[in-house]
Amino acid sequence: MAGFKNILLLLLTLGLTTGVFSAVQMKSGEPKIEAATFNRTGQETAPMIRFTPAQALMDEPITIRLSGLPPKKPLIVKARMLLLGKTWQSQATFIADEHGRVDLGKQAPTGGSYPGVDPMGLFWSMTPDAAQTTPEQKADVKVSDPVVTSFDVEMEGRTVASASLTRWWAKPGVRVTEVRQDGLVGKFFEPQQQGRHPAVLVLSGSEGGIKELDAALLASRGYAAFALAYFGTE
Image (cartoon, rainbow, N blue to C red; front, side, top):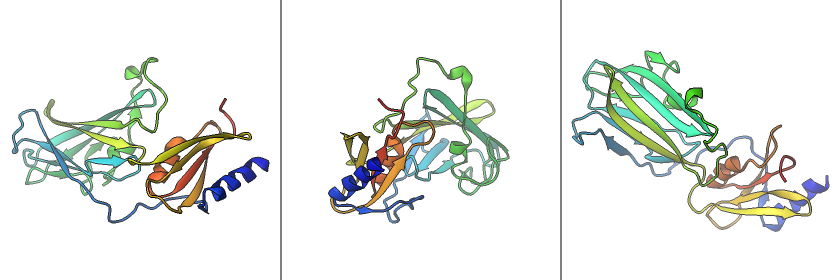
């Protein structure tokens, strides 16, 4: 009880409005940036992969669109990323429309890692590739580490377009303070904007430690988040 009392006192001292939330809605009206990545030829008429937004937080929906493809032809989209010391990958097969386009947010794959229309299907359906995971690969993830996902479009066994998407755990300007006081251990994440913010207490599960990635995402959405380490730390 003393530990939780210290947490509440910490939040009140910082002048925050306390509260606990099980889910966070994305802010509406945030600017969206669309970027185009050309294939190796650099020609506008060549197959192209577009991401909207071009860079995003890890909890932000992504729209993937393909264009410049031969109409009515099959293609395979492959996704690959390195995370937690493992190489993750997924793929899906599509048929380009009469204009040579594919919108993953509107079109269901004919086969692959996930079924049905799902703009984030290639992300959540990723599975680890044991053959490409080595003990030397870094297994921990820092808030400052970007997560880069590489995409390839293949037709008839040939890669016709490639692009990479970078996602982040925190928005620029998110502030973090390490807390070690009177047996209280954790990290406090604050939004870039000054002022009063709703507060969230972030607890780990059976693995212990500090859930700083979750806290960083919450701070990026306007919440003051304290990631408490109640066991599993030195």
